[in-house]
Length: 85
Ligand SMILES: [Zn+2]
Image (cartoon, rainbow, N blue to C red):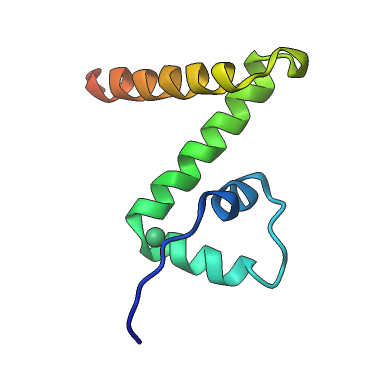
């Protein structure tokens, strides 16, 4: 086996939102278990999905809005990591 492929973004988003096809699910689940990078992407996609549902009415969604949400999540993650337990 040569060539290691990370999951593409569409696959990660489908996995995070639970819409991935059953055929791909075991492969993707296995990959994110063993790949820190893709595992991180899945958690980020889950966070974005949750934040979008909670914070933004669908009619206000735009490309700019999504980027704002991503920036806010990443800032929030950094801040929460810095706080003492
Ligand atoms: Zn990967």
